[in-house]
Amino acid sequence: VKQQQLPRAYDLFRRLVASRSPPALAACSELLDSLCVRAMSLEAASVLGSMHAAAYPLSSKLCCQVIAALLRSNQLNKAFAIFEAHLERAGGADASVQSLASPEWNVEHVLARLTKALSTAMKGQQAHRVYTTARAAGLCTNYATYALPALTLACVDAGMLSQAISVCDDARQALLPLDTFTASVLLSALAKKRLAPHVTSLLAEVSARRLACDAPSLLLAFHSLIELTPPPLDEVVKALTLLALACKAASSALAAATADRSAGGGGGSTAR
Image (cartoon, rainbow, N blue to C red; front, side, top):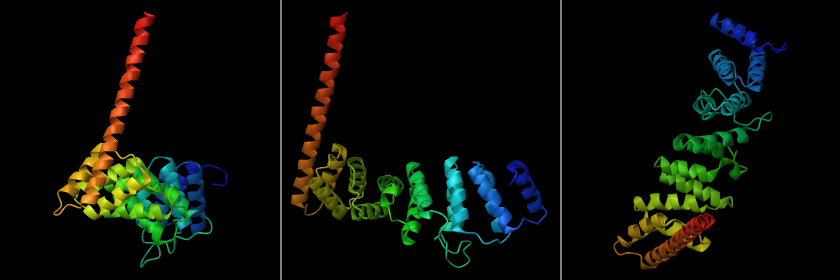
Protein backbone atom coordinates (compact mmCIF):
# COMPACT_ATOMS: atom_id res chain seq x y z
CA VAL A 1 0.00 0.00 0.00
CA LYS A 2 2.77 2.42 0.92
CA GLN A 3 4.41 1.84 -2.46
CA GLN A 4 1.07 2.56 -4.13
CA GLN A 5 0.88 -0.96 -5.56
CA LEU A 6 -2.78 -1.39 -4.74
CA PRO A 7 -3.65 -4.24 -7.11
CA ARG A 8 -0.81 -6.35 -5.67
CA ALA A 9 -1.72 -5.35 -2.11
CA TYR A 10 -5.35 -6.27 -2.67
CA ASP A 11 -4.39 -9.59 -4.27
CA LEU A 12 -2.16 -10.39 -1.29
CA PHE A 13 -5.03 -9.44 1.04
CA ARG A 14 -7.38 -11.85 -0.73
CA ARG A 15 -4.87 -14.69 -0.50
CA LEU A 16 -4.36 -14.08 3.22
CA VAL A 17 -8.11 -14.01 3.81
CA ALA A 18 -8.54 -17.21 1.81
CA SER A 19 -5.92 -18.87 4.01
CA ARG A 20 -7.85 -17.68 7.08
CA SER A 21 -4.98 -15.45 8.16
CA PRO A 22 -6.27 -11.91 7.48
CA PRO A 23 -3.87 -8.99 7.99
CA ALA A 24 -4.00 -6.97 11.19
CA LEU A 25 -6.80 -4.46 11.69
CA ALA A 26 -4.53 -1.46 11.04
CA ALA A 27 -3.31 -2.93 7.75
CA CYS A 28 -6.87 -3.68 6.63
CA SER A 29 -7.96 -0.16 7.50
CA GLU A 30 -5.07 1.35 5.58
CA LEU A 31 -5.84 -0.83 2.54
CA LEU A 32 -9.52 0.09 2.67
CA ASP A 33 -8.67 3.80 2.87
CA SER A 34 -6.35 3.58 -0.14
CA LEU A 35 -8.89 1.64 -2.20
CA CYS A 36 -11.56 4.27 -1.51
CA VAL A 37 -9.23 7.10 -2.48
CA ARG A 38 -8.32 5.33 -5.72
CA ALA A 39 -12.01 4.76 -6.60
CA MET A 40 -11.72 0.98 -6.19
CA SER A 41 -15.05 0.89 -4.37
CA LEU A 42 -15.99 -2.75 -4.96
CA GLU A 43 -12.62 -3.90 -3.66
CA ALA A 44 -13.04 -1.61 -0.62
CA ALA A 45 -16.45 -3.16 0.06
CA SER A 46 -14.86 -6.60 -0.15
CA VAL A 47 -12.21 -5.59 2.40
CA LEU A 48 -14.89 -4.28 4.75
CA GLY A 49 -16.81 -7.54 4.41
CA SER A 50 -13.70 -9.56 5.19
CA MET A 51 -12.97 -7.41 8.23
CA HIS A 52 -16.48 -8.05 9.50
CA ALA A 53 -16.14 -11.79 8.84
CA ALA A 54 -12.88 -11.78 10.80
CA ALA A 55 -14.76 -10.18 13.74
CA TYR A 56 -12.64 -7.03 13.57
CA PRO A 57 -14.33 -4.00 15.19
CA LEU A 58 -15.82 -1.72 12.55
CA SER A 59 -16.42 2.00 12.84
CA SER A 60 -18.86 4.38 11.21
CA LYS A 61 -15.85 6.03 9.55
CA LEU A 62 -14.84 2.82 7.74
CA CYS A 63 -18.41 2.15 6.60
CA CYS A 64 -18.96 5.73 5.46
CA GLN A 65 -15.72 5.69 3.50
CA VAL A 66 -16.93 2.66 1.56
CA ILE A 67 -20.47 4.03 1.08
CA ALA A 68 -19.09 7.32 -0.24
CA ALA A 69 -16.79 5.48 -2.65
CA LEU A 70 -19.64 3.26 -3.86
CA LEU A 71 -21.86 6.29 -4.45
CA ARG A 72 -19.12 7.95 -6.48
CA SER A 73 -18.97 4.85 -8.69
CA ASN A 74 -22.78 4.63 -9.02
CA GLN A 75 -23.02 1.43 -6.97
CA LEU A 76 -26.20 2.52 -5.19
CA ASN A 77 -27.52 -0.92 -4.22
CA LYS A 78 -24.19 -1.96 -2.75
CA ALA A 79 -23.94 1.33 -0.86
CA PHE A 80 -27.34 0.71 0.72
CA ALA A 81 -26.32 -2.86 1.54
CA ILE A 82 -23.37 -1.51 3.59
CA PHE A 83 -25.73 0.85 5.40
CA GLU A 84 -28.23 -1.93 6.05
CA ALA A 85 -25.63 -4.37 7.32
CA HIS A 86 -23.63 -2.06 9.56
CA LEU A 87 -25.11 1.40 10.16
CA GLU A 88 -28.87 0.95 10.40
CA ARG A 89 -28.63 -0.89 13.72
CA ALA A 90 -25.49 0.85 15.00
CA GLY A 91 -25.33 0.82 18.78
CA GLY A 92 -27.84 -2.00 19.12
CA ALA A 93 -27.38 -5.50 20.45
CA ASP A 94 -24.93 -7.53 18.35
CA ALA A 95 -24.33 -4.50 16.09
CA SER A 96 -21.10 -4.49 14.12
CA VAL A 97 -20.75 -0.71 14.64
CA GLN A 98 -21.08 0.62 18.16
CA SER A 99 -22.06 4.18 17.30
CA LEU A 100 -22.86 6.36 14.28
CA ALA A 101 -20.90 9.21 15.85
CA SER A 102 -17.41 9.74 14.47
CA PRO A 103 -14.97 12.58 15.15
CA GLU A 104 -13.01 11.49 12.07
CA TRP A 105 -15.76 11.53 9.44
CA ASN A 106 -18.83 13.56 8.51
CA VAL A 107 -21.37 10.75 8.88
CA GLU A 108 -24.32 13.10 8.33
CA HIS A 109 -22.99 14.13 4.94
CA VAL A 110 -22.71 10.52 3.77
CA LEU A 111 -26.18 9.57 5.03
CA ALA A 112 -27.64 12.66 3.35
CA ARG A 113 -25.95 11.74 0.06
CA LEU A 114 -27.24 8.18 0.32
CA THR A 115 -30.78 9.38 1.09
CA LYS A 116 -30.71 11.79 -1.84
CA ALA A 117 -29.36 9.16 -4.25
CA LEU A 118 -31.97 6.60 -3.21
CA SER A 119 -34.76 9.19 -3.43
CA THR A 120 -33.66 10.23 -6.91
CA ALA A 121 -33.73 6.58 -7.93
CA MET A 122 -37.29 6.36 -6.52
CA LYS A 123 -36.29 3.81 -3.89
CA GLY A 124 -38.64 5.26 -1.30
CA GLN A 125 -38.53 2.53 1.34
CA GLN A 126 -34.75 2.41 1.38
CA ALA A 127 -34.35 6.19 1.29
CA HIS A 128 -36.73 6.64 4.21
CA ARG A 129 -34.89 4.01 6.26
CA VAL A 130 -31.63 5.91 5.85
CA TYR A 131 -33.31 9.23 6.66
CA THR A 132 -35.07 7.80 9.71
CA THR A 133 -31.82 6.34 11.03
CA ALA A 134 -30.02 9.64 10.58
CA ARG A 135 -32.85 11.60 12.20
CA ALA A 136 -33.03 9.27 15.19
CA ALA A 137 -29.28 9.66 15.71
CA GLY A 138 -29.50 13.45 15.62
CA LEU A 139 -27.68 13.62 12.30
CA CYS A 140 -30.10 15.96 10.54
CA THR A 141 -28.60 19.31 11.50
CA ASN A 142 -29.04 20.47 7.89
CA TYR A 143 -32.31 19.12 6.49
CA ALA A 144 -31.70 20.75 3.11
CA THR A 145 -28.91 18.27 2.33
CA TYR A 146 -31.36 15.37 2.59
CA ALA A 147 -33.35 16.59 -0.44
CA LEU A 148 -36.68 16.28 1.38
CA PRO A 149 -38.82 17.11 -1.71
CA ALA A 150 -37.22 14.19 -3.57
CA LEU A 151 -37.67 11.96 -0.51
CA THR A 152 -41.34 12.96 -0.33
CA LEU A 153 -41.86 12.06 -4.00
CA ALA A 154 -40.08 8.73 -3.53
CA CYS A 155 -42.28 7.91 -0.53
CA VAL A 156 -45.42 8.77 -2.49
CA ASP A 157 -44.23 6.60 -5.37
CA ALA A 158 -43.73 3.70 -2.92
CA GLY A 159 -47.23 4.19 -1.48
CA MET A 160 -45.83 5.41 1.84
CA LEU A 161 -48.18 8.34 2.35
CA SER A 162 -47.87 8.59 6.14
CA GLN A 163 -44.09 8.74 5.77
CA ALA A 164 -44.39 11.35 2.99
CA ILE A 165 -46.59 13.50 5.25
CA SER A 166 -44.08 13.14 8.09
CA VAL A 167 -41.20 14.19 5.84
CA CYS A 168 -43.19 17.25 4.74
CA ASP A 169 -43.77 18.14 8.39
CA ASP A 170 -40.02 17.94 9.01
CA ALA A 171 -39.41 20.17 6.01
CA ARG A 172 -41.87 22.80 7.24
CA GLN A 173 -40.30 22.83 10.69
CA ALA A 174 -36.92 23.32 9.02
CA LEU A 175 -38.39 26.23 7.03
CA LEU A 176 -38.18 24.24 3.79
CA PRO A 177 -41.74 24.55 2.46
CA LEU A 178 -43.21 22.41 -0.30
CA ASP A 179 -42.57 23.32 -3.90
CA THR A 180 -45.40 23.35 -6.44
CA PHE A 181 -44.58 20.04 -8.09
CA THR A 182 -44.20 18.12 -4.81
CA ALA A 183 -47.42 19.67 -3.48
CA SER A 184 -49.32 18.60 -6.63
CA VAL A 185 -48.06 15.02 -6.47
CA LEU A 186 -48.77 14.71 -2.75
CA LEU A 187 -52.22 16.30 -3.10
CA SER A 188 -53.14 13.83 -5.86
CA ALA A 189 -52.03 10.87 -3.78
CA LEU A 190 -53.91 12.03 -0.69
CA ALA A 191 -57.06 12.71 -2.69
CA LYS A 192 -56.97 9.29 -4.33
CA LYS A 193 -56.79 7.67 -0.90
CA ARG A 194 -59.66 9.89 0.33
CA LEU A 195 -57.55 11.19 3.23
CA ALA A 196 -59.80 14.22 3.69
CA PRO A 197 -58.10 15.81 6.75
CA HIS A 198 -54.73 15.82 4.99
CA VAL A 199 -56.31 17.04 1.74
CA THR A 200 -57.93 20.01 3.48
CA SER A 201 -54.73 20.81 5.36
CA LEU A 202 -52.65 20.75 2.19
CA LEU A 203 -55.25 22.81 0.30
CA ALA A 204 -55.05 25.44 3.03
CA GLU A 205 -51.27 25.59 2.62
CA VAL A 206 -51.55 25.74 -1.18
CA SER A 207 -54.05 28.59 -0.92
CA ALA A 208 -52.11 30.52 1.73
CA ARG A 209 -48.81 30.27 -0.17
CA ARG A 210 -50.46 30.70 -3.58
CA LEU A 211 -48.84 27.59 -4.96
CA ALA A 212 -49.79 26.95 -8.57
CA CYS A 213 -50.73 23.28 -8.23
CA ASP A 214 -51.77 21.60 -11.47
CA ALA A 215 -55.43 21.23 -12.40
CA PRO A 216 -55.56 17.39 -12.22
CA SER A 217 -54.42 17.34 -8.59
CA LEU A 218 -56.92 20.05 -7.64
CA LEU A 219 -59.70 18.24 -9.49
CA LEU A 220 -58.95 15.08 -7.53
CA ALA A 221 -58.97 17.07 -4.31
CA PHE A 222 -62.34 18.61 -5.22
CA HIS A 223 -63.91 15.22 -5.95
CA SER A 224 -62.52 13.67 -2.76
CA LEU A 225 -64.15 16.42 -0.70
CA ILE A 226 -67.45 16.79 -2.53
CA GLU A 227 -68.12 13.07 -2.07
CA LEU A 228 -67.99 13.33 1.73
CA THR A 229 -71.22 13.22 3.71
CA PRO A 230 -71.78 15.99 4.47
CA PRO A 231 -69.23 17.73 2.27
CA PRO A 232 -67.10 20.43 3.94
CA LEU A 233 -68.42 23.32 1.88
CA ASP A 234 -65.70 25.82 2.73
CA GLU A 235 -62.98 23.41 1.67
CA VAL A 236 -64.94 22.39 -1.42
CA VAL A 237 -65.24 26.04 -2.46
CA LYS A 238 -61.53 26.53 -1.82
CA ALA A 239 -60.66 23.52 -4.00
CA LEU A 240 -62.99 24.70 -6.74
CA THR A 241 -61.56 28.23 -6.64
CA LEU A 242 -58.00 26.93 -6.88
CA LEU A 243 -59.05 24.63 -9.71
CA ALA A 244 -60.58 27.54 -11.63
CA LEU A 245 -57.38 29.55 -11.21
CA ALA A 246 -55.27 26.61 -12.38
CA CYS A 247 -57.45 26.09 -15.44
CA LYS A 248 -57.30 29.81 -16.25
CA ALA A 249 -53.51 29.81 -15.94
CA ALA A 250 -53.23 26.70 -18.13
CA SER A 251 -55.53 28.25 -20.74
CA SER A 252 -53.51 31.46 -20.78
CA ALA A 253 -50.26 29.54 -21.14
CA LEU A 254 -51.71 27.50 -24.01
CA ALA A 255 -52.96 30.64 -25.77
CA ALA A 256 -49.55 32.28 -25.40
CA ALA A 257 -47.77 29.20 -26.74
CA THR A 258 -50.16 29.05 -29.71
CA ALA A 259 -49.59 32.75 -30.44
CA ASP A 260 -45.82 32.26 -30.33
CA ARG A 261 -46.01 29.34 -32.77
CA SER A 262 -48.26 31.33 -35.08
CA ALA A 263 -45.92 34.32 -34.97
CA GLY A 264 -42.97 32.08 -35.70
CA GLY A 265 -44.76 30.43 -38.61
CA GLY A 266 -45.83 33.79 -40.01
CA GLY A 267 -42.30 35.12 -39.80
CA GLY A 268 -41.08 32.09 -41.72
CA SER A 269 -43.66 32.60 -44.45
CA THR A 270 -42.73 36.26 -44.84
CA ALA A 271 -39.08 35.39 -45.14
CA ARG A 272 -39.83 32.96 -47.93
